[in-house]
Image 1 (cartoon, rainbow, N blue to C red):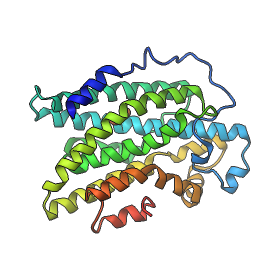
Image 2 (cartoon, helix red, strand yellow):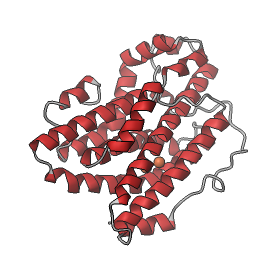
Image 3 (cartoon, rainbow, N blue to C red):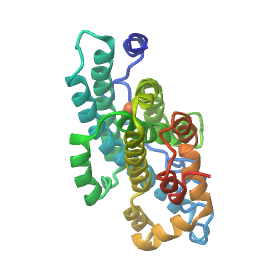
Image 4 (tube, protein in one colour):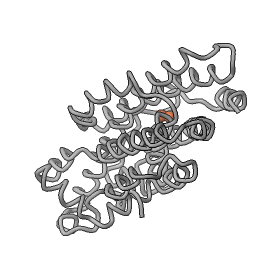
Length: 287
Ligand SMILES: [Fe+2]
Ligand SMILES: [Fe+2]
């Protein structure tokens, strides 16, 4: 499979410096993500916003998601480098891991350029997660590492896919998302294969440990996607915006929808199950 993924990478890879027209004007009337996926959609707060404010909030939420995605990609690069360190470099398996590092390098630059173009803050995951990530990328490994990577990749993938062919969405973000979706499809196949190969070899105690590590990482990433500071752009205090979003049934459904497919896969492969399944449920990510 790694050989096929290497072929596909050689055929279809993009360079953010040449494949995106960063100077193209932004359309003031177009949203940056489907409005029904914005965290406050459908709430009283939302009803009180002008169309312009809604577009502005969609921009800041998309920038936050891109910034957290970028943060996780840098973590992933280190995880993959540590993984490749122990592989035979002549194997397609090792070479694909290195190819994926190359993809993520370009993605991170692409997201960084998009955030800069939107002229929003670089929200990122917050100080605590930033520092926990420092430890995580130095120690994580095995099936839970690939399982957590899958959650981050597949959740953002689902949102990005929904913007690709939607003419109501800002053309620049559609192009960024299209490039990301095409290249991430290969990463998802690689990581899924790693979980399928790695999970059956775990004994009972290891399995529960990897389930717990998967749940903790996945929930941390999902909770971090929309930085509460985005609400400042519509004049709402971060704490208030966060509480309204958390209680918003539309947003809860969006979070479930984002992880729906990967949760199904992780349940089938045993990476969700046992006592830690309760964590997924409490986070609102399981039905
Ligand atoms: Fe990526
Ligand atoms: Fe990826």
